[in-house]
Amino acid sequence: MASAEEASRPFAGLSDVSISEEIPVEGDIAVPVGPSTRDDEFSTLDEPVKETIVRDLRAVGNKFIHVLYPKRSSALLRDWDLWGPLLLCVTLALLLQGGAADSDDQGGPQFAEVFVIIWFGSIVITLNSKLLGGTISFFQSLCVLGYCIMPLTVALIVCRIVLLSVSGKVSFAVRLGVVIASFGWSTFASTAFLADSQLTNRKALVVYPVFLFYFVIGWMILTFSPGN
Amino acid sequence: MATPNDLQFQEFEEAADLLSADPGAPTLSMSASNDPAATAGAPAAGEDVRLDLSEDEAAQEESSELLGGQKSAGGFWTFEYYQSLFNVDTVQVLDRVKGSLMPLPGRNFVKHYLRNNPDLYGPFWICVTLVFSVAISGNLSTFLSSLGDPSYHHRPQFHRVTIAAVVIFLYAWLVPIGLWAFLTWRQGAERQVGGYSFLETVCVYGYSLFIYIPTSILWIISYEWLRWTLIVVAMVISGSVLVLTFWPVVRDDTRVTAVATVVTIVVLHTLLAIGCKLYFFQTSEHTPPAATIAPPIHPTPVTAH
Image (cartoon, rainbow over all chains, first blue to last red; front, side):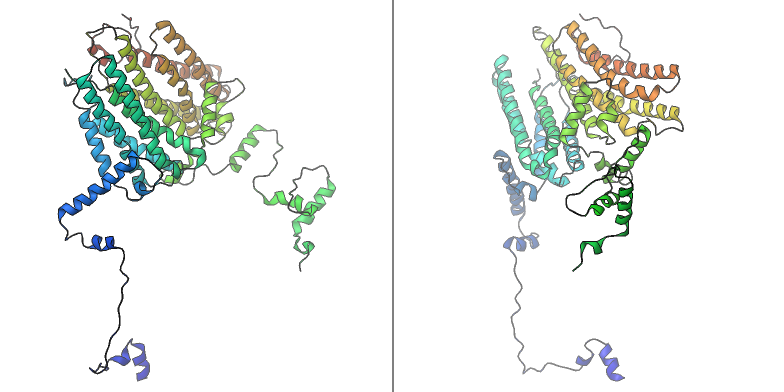
């Protein structure tokens, strides 16, 4: 009875056991240590702020390089972040503001309009891709579409420089060429990342909205005219 | 070792009896099995291989509706429901677009091209493309028509996109809602014979707007006679797609209602086309920019320069 009672409680038989000093307890508790980054993740609270920012900046810069030389790598998809798209979107919207300084509504797109077009357009394209049966996740797709705006932002900077120096037909021809080249580059870069996630017989259905998206952004850049 | 005869089920003997009674009955043979009695029983197990010999169109429609794949999986608040509305391939979308460009009198768009699989991809992206093509082409035509005028300061009139979007999406959604509600109300009890579902109506209207995309691009060429010719051609094609689709549904009704419905469809379509042309493509060079803000809701004759 007592033994049964004792047996029912776990470790019941050990309540009066004491380890004498003579028995050496030794061993080797080896915990498998993960890669060194895991240690960093656990202790990012202690690192200086500069390191945190630099690490994020490096990730963003890495993705910019991936857009510059688009090849079918999964680095952009695996570690998505939305810093890059936000930076590009704000830059684009600010640079498109400088023109048409007279503030009547005949002018170029307002800041909010550019923002809405880029983000709402990206969301709609992502939803479209997912509804057609794509395997890419929501934020990964937003990340890719946002980062691939970079060639168009570069084109806008070039256009503004061209508008400062040259004028007339030559400037228009140069701007047209630059915008067309960057629009093609953006579309090609984003399809290089997005095409793998779609069924083969629906690829064109997914690529066409991306084409339209960058075409509209390219048109906004091309029709940018500086103020008086 | 089980012989094939041991695996025979009761139904096969029945089917064999049926087959021997009527040797001319339609059967399906599958190459995998070499037992003649088993082949006759195979169609009984399959779902999609039922031969429908009935000549009745209504019965065929109903059976195809039953046999067709699950259309609306889940309620309209689930993601799968909308995924079933995008269940089209590239080839199918291109096929439907082609069907909207070439309306033939024998081909009902809904029956021939949609085939119980209406999609929302086509209508949505055709409307979006139309919005941007109308706005961009309008902008381009204004720019080109004022090339020789040095006093004209080019402005990219971006608010037109917003207005175009509102007008076109309202048309592509409200008119099908109204038409479907009206037709359903008129059909009454016999709804399933020839009536279209709401999604099919939206689909037809969306695809019928496709012809306006190349038309709006061609409107950049600023000759008035060319623009009016393009409008007439586009309206004929697009309107006939709609009329051919909806005439079989309304012709059973009273004469007056049928004609009135068809005329209303055509008139609304015409209003959209002419409204877009007059608002976005104004060739008057000396109009001050302030005049382009007011959209003509009812198309009043605008005298070009």
